Image (cartoon, rainbow, N blue to C red):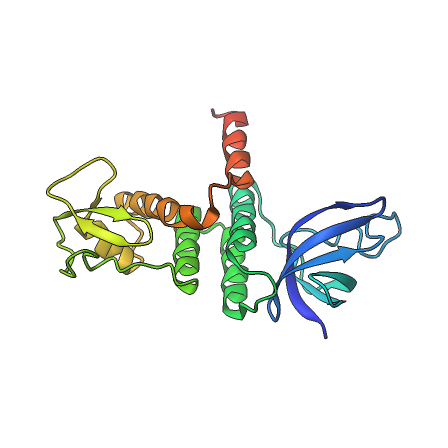
Length: 235
């Protein structure tokens, strides 16, 4: 059986092969060995790259399976600059947040659509925030933006709230560093990200909410993004 897939990470293996992490629609995240894929005449050479829609055949009994064949089903999605770093960030989220060998067909479709949005020039920050919120909800880590996690009372538009990871939002007596205003939280509940204040709050919330599940890992895509900005002629 062939599987719709994307490569999310690869590295050399022995002299001529690769170890490839892929995200498939039907079987979730899989670890594959692509034997001989680095040989000059291999049909796989240059194909096993991120952002290329693929159809793969593979098999094996252990966690590390053998790649039998691969073909591109469409041209590679064109991601450059910030969009490229953002695509790599999505790949890291898929790798670290999704359990291996577990189907996540709806996540695959949303991931594919998010890559297309990044490639189309859509506003990158709102696109990333929507994907992060989606992942949190799918994995059962989402929170209620409209209810005080401590008292159960409705979030007041002009109130101020602190976010406690893995718990939710709790009312404060007034504004404090890092606090979220009630009207921002109501906007986040509706994914209304047009306001710069709300968009900044969404990014801050995502970082806090994802941190426990990333377990302190430093994401390479963030480091590449920072490095790229520092190397930009406008900096």
